[in-house]
Length: 454
Image 1 (cartoon, rainbow, N blue to C red):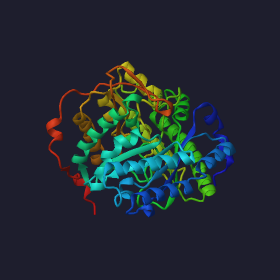
Image 2 (tube, rainbow, N blue to C red):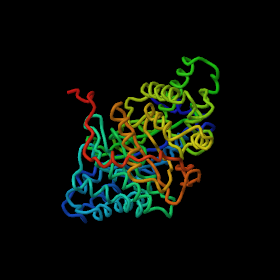
Image 3 (cartoon, rainbow, N blue to C red):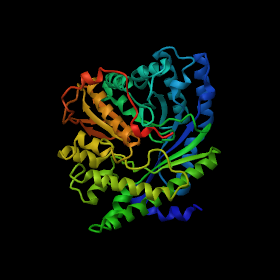
Image 4 (tube, one colour):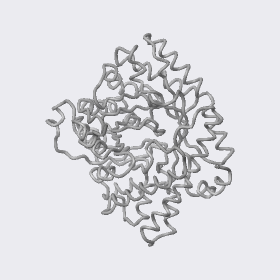
């Protein structure tokens, strides 16, 4: 049983330690909206989203008031749009009309973001996939709340290097299309290896084709809660440290379970998963990097950082899986730079580099996230960074991602303001040596040997 008494136990966490439910995300299948006529497809997409999500925001606000639990974002994810537009979209411009329809529908129901302007191309690209990918710069420049993602690799299929190379170019173009906003379009674009079908977090959320017609997924957060709990066990053994993180993650996840079940009941939509990730914000005291410092590091990036992050990620998952019947999505610790004041401080102090962040992604939930780099970084260099991160996910059978922002007109050391939950970031240096010849090879990198498990 989950009841109000469990919520009462967490009142202090909510009031003083930045505990929140980061998002309620309504996943919507658009497979029944496919039509050979583009205008009819757009019409069906708009009608279905606005019908199913009509009460999403008001339901979230009701739960906030009823239980006193902050719900930061209400979001929608949809079936990857490359699949929905395959029959009717003959060009990138056609796909842009679908992006605008998603934007219009999302704003009509009042959500913060709508994700699923996506393509799944880990093994190959259809004409529709390629058209959608090439439309991304324009689509993100001409919409407000649409988020885009592309899955480029998986442990089962290997890595699509043609798509990796193309995404380097697309990220550069997206930065250029939104240069008047510090290349903000790139903050709404992420590439994945092993992308999960039920991720409630943006920019990577989409509604997988194996999901029900509609489903509620909830993402919880609580770096501040974990950090506060750890202040009470300073100097204690790793066993005590791990137990403390586990118990705290359990309580945090129970809050998410309560919100998810209540939203499911009120909206009459099946409950999908709780994603128990530690998702930081720019707010003071809501930082994964601060947890690492509390564990015993001078700064994130110091020797021992990868081990500390591995410990944190594992204990969060162990505590969370006991608190919810259905844990999914990404689940673990996010390490975005711009969204975490402690990470920003570590970069500014010189403790944290792009290479160290890459090492940390071997043991955390996602990957190189919300990292500002110089605007003159070459597309092939961006593709090379993407390939490195995809390789980590492919070989280690985990989800990894890249959300880089080559900020047009900005150089190393300058600061970029994104606003809101996206925060701000120092522009980080990138390895200057070329990988052009590597990226020009084309084709696919085969799946690793341990993928053959049938």
